[in-house]
Figure 1 (cartoon, rainbow, N blue to C red):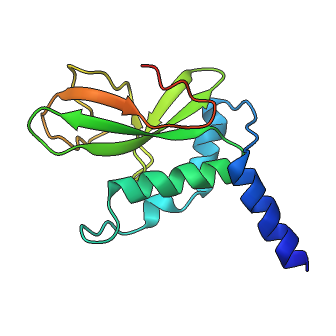
Figure 2 (figure 1 turned 180 degrees about the vertical axis):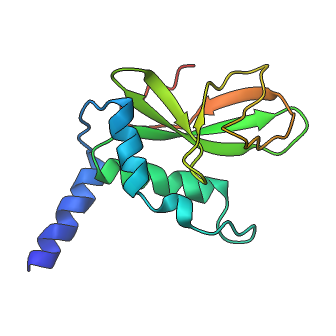
Length: 139
């Protein structure tokens, strides 16, 4: 019976998540213990969108507000990263495959996190915040 209530509480929390204000350092601490970035990329079964989806779900379980952000490039395929809401630095962008931070994501500029540029020297054409409870999606 305890397993039932544990699963029910997780289910209800995912339907109606409660998020607490976090700092950038708290996000970094969460990322340090999260294992999403240790997964193996597999073009056939586990790609950037899967990394992002898993990281967002893990953040929700830790009561941290996060959502998927889709980046479209002019001549290359798109990419999915994760945004976190912090109370000291606003929205920060994370590469879920490496936990590297993007300085900013904006149309007309390259999207590079540390030494990782998913579109190569390609410039961002469009940025789309995915739907998220409580997220306005504006950017």
